[in-house]
Amino acid sequence: MDLDFENFDLENIEVRGNSDSTNITSERYKKNVKIFLDACDIRIDDVKKSTIICLYNVLTDLILPKKGEQLRIRTQQQINLISLIFKIIREHKRIDELTIATYTLNKECFSFLIKFLRKGVIKKLNLFLASAYSFRDKEYYEKLKRDASIIKTKYDFHLIFAWLHLKITLAKCGDDYYQFEGSMNYSTNNMAEQLLFENNKKQYDYDYDFIKKIITNTNNKALEVIC
Image 1 (cartoon, rainbow, N blue to C red):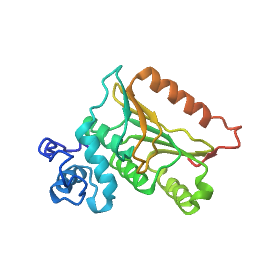
Image 2 (image 1 turned 90 degrees about the vertical axis):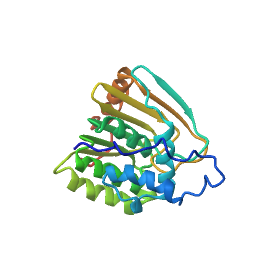
Image 3 (image 1 turned 180 degrees about the horizontal axis):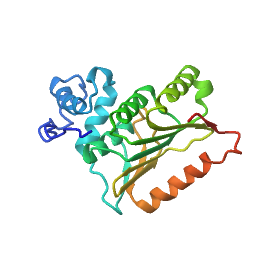
């Protein structure tokens, strides 16, 4: 599926910092973000206001690292890592394989990822989540397992729970290999966070093999492989 972002004009959005920059319900503000979400087949009413702001900030300000380039980012505003996935999809139209190891992946982010998987925008999705969900949000934990059992029958999808605090994302797009890590989760994060974002096949392969080795260690009783 090719996403049509040709009409997504970010150049004409008002610059943040105006007197009403905190008014996230601005019709013009929402209209421009809505154009992007429509291209992704996502209803803006299904997106949290905080996520809309994160999308706006990343789509307007962030330039993806070139091959061999590394970005060190310190945030001074709220951000959600899912906005980086949207940015990569906007630039590349698809992700061949996406691997996420994280402590928190909220319901909104999970729904976005599954929608992209079903649309063929993400070809393969690997989720490596914290086992802490089994007690800190048992209802969501059970839902994730139920959904996984359905999704895996039609799509290249893998879900593993483990006792971890990793926060690493790997996105392969053709011959671009994105890797980012830092203090942030896939939820609305605090105002001050750090992020290391690079386009580096060597680092991508290292972390991919590191995560794969953990997943394939069937003798590790701390693992719960769902699919």
